[in-house]
Length: 325
Figure 1 (cartoon, rainbow, N blue to C red):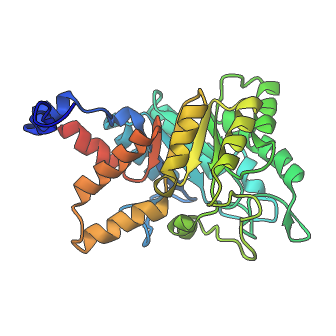
Figure 2: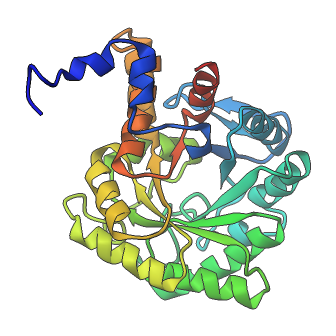
């Protein structure tokens, strides 16, 4: 097809024509809203590096989850900030933990909302690493035992989906085995399969006070230069029983999302992380960008790369915009 016989601009002339031939559709069904849950009552503490987001007590988390459900968002993912931290993150598997309490309360208020729990220990340990330390290094297999306890605790609290995020070797298999042994065969596993060691996580670590007290997480999160390794990691998680695989972060890894989407016959999630959110909010606040256009363009780009679901702090904002279209 060549000009002048073919004129691509014909199909761009009006919004209705553009809508008729649009290749990628962004829907509220693609969105997952992350929430930070803290102890107490009536707590809604703003997160300075994430404008518009807050640490929420259980009662406030229930209100926010209901708002998400009313907007048509199908799922929320919960991150817990405990009252007490220790060397192994034992509050993560406490029956009275903040995530467990929030899950029960949210499911009571919004029974059809899918409630996901992030399953990691960086928020729960006093050293900020994603499991048990031995002589200053993450002990992979000891951490798996605690992860197994945690996901079972979440399932008992009514969580629909667990999301192990520590990038431990064998973490999906440990979750699936422990869940099945306890009778939770229907609990979904969304694995953080290709989670990169990234500078985009800074605001999140502020929100949950999870920055490592020493060292960093490059020994277990992926090197940002690697693509083939992502396919190997995802393939391992699929073999161990993952129901959904995830790429995190999203924007600097759109090529990875595309490769995984092409290679793996499972739903693919992408996490539009805190630093990506904060950059848009900061630029919009300074009048440098049009927030509405950039948010929707960003989320559509993640969909176009191959993500079936997007975890994003802009979920409420985007859902409201989609409802107007």
